[in-house]
Length: 156
Image (cartoon, rainbow, N blue to C red; front, top):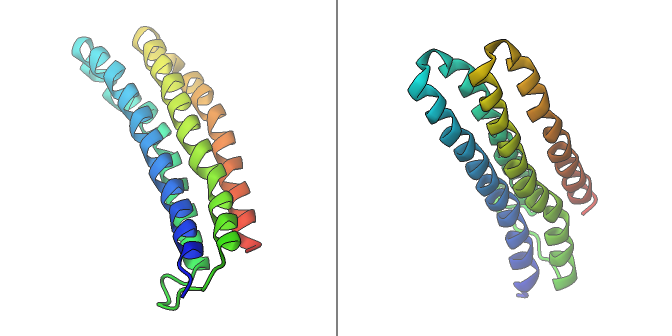
């Protein structure tokens, strides 16, 4: 049985979840670093900072959705894996790349934006909504990446 096709498809699914979650971890971590400094001076801002810290974590969830959908299309959960040619496996891999690359980069960018929002909130607590909106603007591109991967996977 030819296994290169299914191997390539699994690599694509793994990249979608792995890179998106790695970006989320980095983004959430960078907000946490800045947030810890603020909390040392003002522990009362914990809930505001926590909201900003959660935001870059969504790309990891989107990567998990893409991973799940790819494995579902491959028959992984039913126990009957599809037999794929090498080129079909490459198509699965390519379909997962928007979420993998876009998830990684947008989560890191969103973490930087949310960390700047923490700095804003540290000086002006009433501006939390503006900090959230600025961080969520980056989210749009992660959603586009998820949509692109979903539509391409759906056609396979």
